[in-house]
Structures are given as structure tokens and as C-alpha cells.
Image 1 (cartoon, helix red, strand yellow):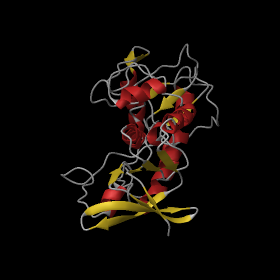
Image 2 (image 1 turned 90 degrees about the vertical axis):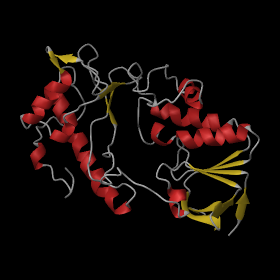
Image 3 (image 1 turned 90 degrees about the horizontal axis):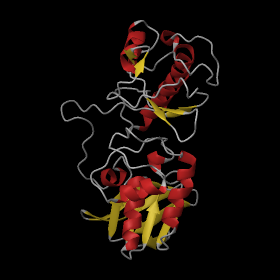
Image 4 (image 1 turned 135 degrees about the vertical axis):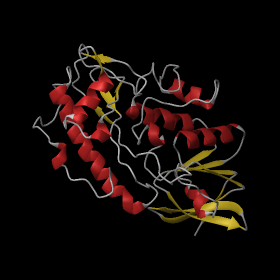
Length: 297
């Protein structure tokens, strides 16, 4: 097995990994940026997550990335922002990395092992279409999101809440089009008091759930604006009790969430002003007939 040697290895090319790699390269380090998918950006691209949330301070690389993506300055919950253009972000973030000549990017490479000397990580091994790959460096930065390098290195890992181990519900965000902008409301989340027919929209959704028109899990309907008129970024689906680090759990959760997408889209078509012309089948959907995997609330 051939070994490639670098000053810094960054595992994971999501927003954290991109910024770590660029920051190291700007300091003169030769960097290997390893990504298991075929595109950089992580949740900003392949994860389809927007608006961009979270900020610990001004003048960080977050501001630099947001400016590249055309995202206006906003507060940490994205109250005044829109979901960015996910397809454009794939190119913009790739160009951001490519400007640093001393970063080598390896896509479709999944971390499969850690090279160690005692408790010191000396590099990683990856599975790829070329077969096993080996990377060595004095510094390895774990930006995998699931702490894969740290776990494989034997570091102490804590998952979920300390009280019961439960994790945040898993979700799939998705985009709908065909919304009438003159009628179609926007709801950014629990802090939003947007009204529908003189009633708080989220209270209206809760009543529809109480009436059996919407699963209780989907009672908090979040409809974010998009860069494209007539589109909304929907952040509503959820499956509970899922440990996404266990590979056997992923398919059942993904299936349940995609069934929720179908159900929720039909609900919006049938019940929400301005959403009547969403593409898709407008047959009525009884959520109680949608089979859910055992263990999902």
C-alpha cells in the first residue's frame, strides 16, 4: 500500500473541514483533505441544510464562507436570512479550496482505520475505488461530524445526553416549489409568530395534528425562504430514538423520513394558502396508514 505524506490531514470536507484545511494551508502546511462523498460542503451542500445557523463570534471563517455563498449577515438562528443555493455552493466551496495550491482533495474516500504509535495518531487509512489508501501526517484533524477518526483511535466518545443517551432527532430537509409568494407564508421556527387567518401558524399546525390531519411529530412546520422565488426549504421531518452512527439504523430512518416528506407535502397542498400548486400527487393521505419502522415515535 502506497503512503502519502503531508503536514496536516483533515478528515471530512464539511464546513469545519474546509475551514480547517484552508486555515492550515494559509499557514504554509501541505494538507490532505479527505471526504467520503463525491462533493465538498457537507451539510451546506449534500446535507441540504439552510439557512446557515450558528455563530460564536464576528470576523471568523464563518463570515468568510457566508460571504462567498452570498448569505447576508444574520443572527444565529437565520431569522433574516434565506437558504443559500445548494448547487452553487458545491462550486463556490470547491473553488475556495482550490485557491490554496497546497491542498490535495480526495473525494469518495471513507476513513477505515487509524495509524497510531501508542496514543498518538500518525495518520489514517481510507477505502476508495482505487483500493486502500494510506495517509500520514504529524497532525490529523477529525472533522467527520461523527468523530470517526477519534472513535477508531480509541478516544473516549460520548453519544447523546448524559442522562439517557438519547440524541437529537434525525431529519431530512427538502425544497418545494410552486409556492404563490403573494399568499405562501414563511415560518422560521419556534420563535416565529407569523399568523395564519388571525392565529399563530404553529398553533394552527398543532390543532391540525390534534385533529389527526398531521402526525404529532410534524406539528412544528418550518418553512424557510429560498434564493429562488416560489420555493421553500422545509425543515420539519423527524425520527426519534435513532443512533445514526449505527449503520443498521440508517435505512429505516431514511425510509420513515421520506414517507413523511410525501405526507407533509400533500398536507401543505391541501391545507395551506399559496401552497395549492405544489408539484406532485394531490391524493389525500392518511398518515395513520403510513407504515413506520418499530421504535420510531
